[in-house]
Structure formats: structure tokens, C-alpha cells
Image (tube, rainbow, N blue to C red; front, side):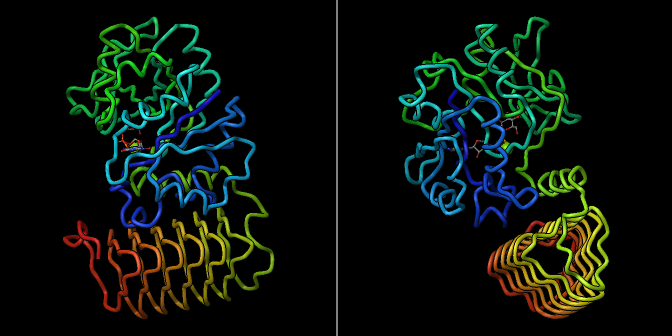
Amino acid sequence: MKALVLAGGFGTRLRPLSCTRPKILFPILNKPLLYWMLEKMKANDVDEVIMAVNRQTAFQIKQSKLQKSDIKISYSFDPPGKPLGTGGPVKRAEKLLRNDDFLALNGDIFTDINYAELMKFHKKVGAIATIALHKVDDPSRYGVAELADDGRILRFIEKPTAKMAPSNLINAGVYAFNPKIFEYIPKGRKVSMEREVFPKLSEQGALYGYVHDGLWSDIGEVKEYLQINLYMLSLYSCDTCAPKHFDNVELKKPVLIDDKSFVGNDSIIGPNVILGSKVYVGRNVQIRNSVIMSGVEILDNTVIDGAVIGENVKIGRNVKINERCIIGDYAIIGDNVFLGEGVSICPAKEVLESISSAIFNAKCW
Ligand code: GDD
Ligand code: MG
């Protein structure tokens, strides 16, 4: 089975962390999302993956050294500077996919959906497109389906207002397509699968839904990204999640600390902390409910609570970083700085003075 992964677009809701990495390479438990997706694909009969990306993302995926998996990976590029939406990239990969039913996956979804079962259902009902559906409390941020008893989707509405949503079943961003799908996608322009193609298919009775009620998360917003990391961490908690060589360090489970990281005396790490590779933590530091990416340096007496810290950030002494702060890669936070709730710092920015929360939230410093 072949799979097309949609991994272009801008990831605007994950800025400033997405300024420097595509969503598909955001780490979950210290491994890129794409790693988890490839593992799942391998376990679900996928032997060839086509990544629909821009050139920058392809470059970063190659740099990430994920290539050495048993699955063949090839790339299908959006035209430079012209993102094609969710439909255009499918049409563009037609030559690679037109021989058989195939999977298509949004590249920002962490889930345990069984792709092989989805494909089986899709073939059994003879659909042109089958959408994996997932139940959520607030469907208004997603595509929403009205599902009939025979599995047909009677209506598909992308991001309806809460009042207009026909159900709580949302498009999980995981699809099985028959090659006939290509006839429904106009060539050479930006196309929204959700606004142009799915509504048409549902009118024709050719769109089906496959309900999934397990693990599902769109990491496209920072809150969700942090949440799925900490949720996975809670499942993963074990004795060997941290190197054994720390003295006088209090580890409050669950924590995951890469072997190549160091934590100084009298520091308290956890609960709910992930430290990536080569993180240096000084003395008397406290970190809670946070994801710290690789190469970060955190000096003595600093407190971090509920934040996401990008790669290679340098944080000085006596710093306080509060809930929902997001620090872009390579930023420098000087000694004694206080960052109030929800402050975002741009990549490589040097911050030497405190920034309080509230009204500044909308801005990236
Ligand atoms: N190659 C390419 N080119 N990929 C793109 C482009 C593009 O121009 N634009 C978006 N994508 C990819 C994104 O990287 C992402 O993996 C996927 O298409 C969906 O785009 P998002 O921007 O993340 O959309 P969304 O999260 O608002 O909504 C979509 O996902 C929801 C589930 O999380 C829709 O499919 C909704 O219907 C769905 O419920
Ligand atoms: Mg998304």
C-alpha cells in the first residue's frame, strides 16, 4: 500500500517553533512526528511513502536522518512559493498514485488509527474517499461530517460555527482514496479537499466515514502539541527514562531525559518534563510541565513551568519562564529575566529585560 503525506503549508499556529521546523518534524517524546508516523505505516502494510512538501521541508526531513527505515520515501513538491492547499498536492502526485487505492495523511496528526483496517473498510464499501472520523467536544475547528448508518457521509462542512456543526464527528486527517479521486481535483491551482472535493463527493454518495475512537491529536497548535507530549509521557513513564548518573537531583515522574543530557545538583525536574538530547541544566533549577528540545542550556536557580523551549536556546540564571511561554530556537534569555504567561520569543532573539503577560500575548518578541 502507498501513502501520501501532506506536509506543506506554514504551520502558522505553531509559530515561533514552526519558523525553523516543519510540523512533521516536531518532536514527540524526543522523536520527530514523522518517525512515529513511519513506524505506524510499517506496521500497517505501507511500503512506499510520498511526501507532499516544499523544498525546504524535504531538505529538513533528509537532514533529520529518518531515511533509514524500511519504507521507500519519495518527494512530490509544491511549486516554489505556491502552496497548493490540501487538494493540489494530491493531484500533483497523481502519476505516482493512480494505479491503486492509497492512503493520504495530514502531516500533523498523532494517532493510533489502524490504517490497514481503514483501507479494508474503504474497499469493502467501494468508496471514492473514506475519511477517518474522530469524536471531539468542540468540532468547530475541524471538518465535520454527518454520518448515515450505512457509513456514508451525508454532509461534510469544513470549520462550521459551533451552531452549524451537524455532529461531533470530525475529519481526523487520515484518508483512503480510490484513484477516481483525481477526477475531482482541478489541476494547476490551490485546491481545498475539505471545501471543494469532499462536499461534492458526499452529494454523490461516494464519501464514507470510518469512526476511530482511540488516540488522536492534531499538533497544529502549541497547546495540543504540549498536551500530546505530556500525555504520551504519562503512558511511557519508566525507571530508565532518565540517566542514572545524577547526584542530588530530584526527578518527579513522569520525566524523560535523554542520555546525553546533564542536570546539576539540587535541581527538581518534573513532574511532566521532557528533556531532549544534550540539554544542560545547572544547579537548583526547577522544571515542570514542559518540553525542552535538544541543545538547550539552563543556568542556576531558573524556574520553568508549562513552557515549550526550542532547540539550542540559552537561558541564564534566576530566570522565571511561566505557563504557555514558547521560546523559538537559538533565542537567548538573559539573567534575572521574568517571562509572564503566554509570552512568545522569536528564534535567535536576545531578551535581556522581563516581559509581562496579558496584552503582549498576541505578539512574538
Ligand atoms: N504539500 C502541502 N501544501 N501540504 C499542505 C498545504 C500545502 O499548500 N497546506 C496544508 N498542508 C498540509 C498541512 O501540513 C497539514 O498536514 C495538512 O495539510 C492539513 O492542513 P492544516 O493547515 O493542518 O489544516 P487544519 O488542521 O486546519 O484542518 C485539517 O485537518 C483537520 C484535522 O486536524 C482539515 O483537513 C480538517 O478538515 C481536519 O478536521
Ligand atoms: Mg492541522
